[in-house]
Length: 477
Image (cartoon, rainbow, N blue to C red; front, side, top):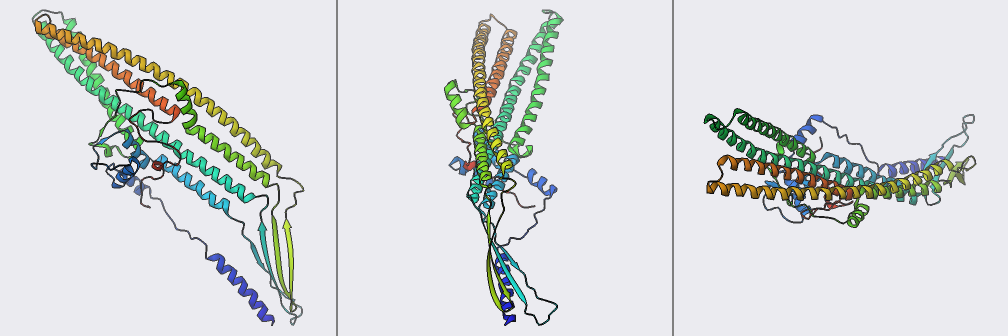
């Protein structure tokens, strides 16, 4: 009889262990190989068929030809969202926080104890067998508060992904702007060098005929040398900006070979924006404002949890004991007595944190409004400068046309025409510089409101957006 009771207890213990072991997960090593990772990064290509599927999915239409030869801001932005490693880090951080929701929803496990025994001084004394079960009960809705805190933390992490995505897009725009500006500078400087070479040849012939003094030729040669130096610098800058563009996308510079980059509307930036419109966009669209609001929600949920933690949890412990042939049952209640503290410290910290997050939200919002006003003023000023430069270019182009007409009538020579061409190229260069400043100011204004302001752009960057959910598929090292 005694043996049967003991066997029953052992059987119960074995059954508990069996049931709990079925749900265990097992460790699987995933080693990192720096050499393989570096090789994978170098092998990335804008011809990747998975990238094509990603672009088509987010543009909402098929790509006519693949691999694409021409890339614009939208397609380059999607490529950066697909490849850029900093955005992948933000996605991984979001996954970590999302996993925290599982932890928050878990109920505390019951405890199970076995205490067999007997009296050694009397060998014939029956064995003792004790089974104890501890069932914890959380009070004051703690699990619900934990779940709310985890959801708010996940919402904050999702906003952080969108915030990082905007940084990626902003950096990409800046590098693409630098590249196109350098490319245009090279084109203008090559024309300027060719024209200066023709002027030097004309002046050399005049010097041979004794029609001019040498200082005039020397000045022309100095202008030619200056144009050559500027051309070499611009060519070097174009290579540097191409490298920066590749880094902004997340591929090697070799992956850009043979590709062309276009910017629809580059020469026609938006004419104006109202201050009211920009301020509204800054308040509604900026990720840092959304993040500050989400962080306040996290602090609020944390305070609710700490207030709930003032109330102790209860553990109910039914116990079965087999002693001297008798079955004994007891019921114990265990709880922590809030005698020395009522969780005042954590509650005070959580209240202070909530107050801090509220102050941060107001500061971020005020900074956003100020930044948007300043960016809008800078953009309007850059547009005024651009219009003035464009008006002067029109005047200079009319002068060049008039000089060419005079040449056709015999009232002006070729040197006068080439000199007018140089002046026109100089005016075009100032317009190009003003256009660059206007586009840079537009980029700063976009950063102030954190949404694209050019009509040609169709991508929307927002928390939970489809384009932010998936990155480059990499094989496990």
